[in-house]
Image (cartoon, rainbow, N blue to C red; front, side):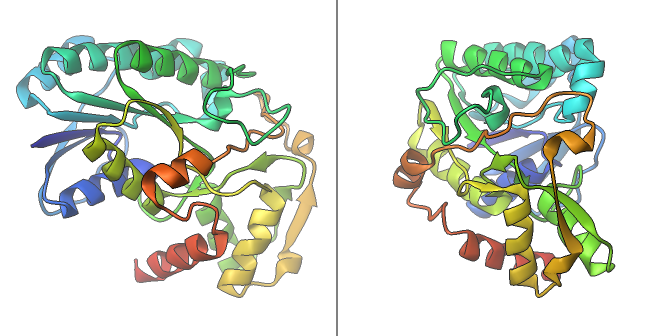
Length: 293
């Protein structure tokens, strides 16, 4: 069975690629800006999703049985300043991919985000109506609707952290800064559900093997970015005084952020059997992987 993972160099995509390869599947990992290192059992392919004809030709040459679509323009502020690019990558490419998936009778799973919600209540369940407040969230919500309307699956994740490649994630950023003895400001009034990429990889493999359809939240427990930073300090043995609480509005982002986009993970935990709310266990895994690199 052939599995195509788009965005194979991203923080979640890299772990998903590894999990399918370890399970014995033939994996093709797509990337664009960030190259993927050699992984046993994985074929790498550099494809720019803005080139529609090359993308279609690529899918037809691969003929995948499963498509795990993690690739996205995830820079929230860049999505706001370059809306055309955000739409092409996050919406148009998703439509092309799932249409090609249907031609090859391939199972399609779309990785989405907590930022499809407005952040006014938190602990969102799968059946609640998304109301994105920034353009990134809007394009991801459109991607969700495209996937679901064509019989695909949607996994929502939140504040992904872990080792791997691609852009530096918040958890890794905290560890790197504190390792250098540098101070960090963390929002005390923005609530998220920090999710370890290794658990995402495990969950995606389980859900794809079940050919799950619909929406599920694979995420960690609800906490502020400040509290998450303190948990990292505790696990890694850093001095917590180097973390300063700050209001989310003080960061002067170009694009608005939801204040509480935390996700209810009860359905996801039950469906996968993973202890998603155990932040101590998740950070223990993260610590082991960080120092093993």
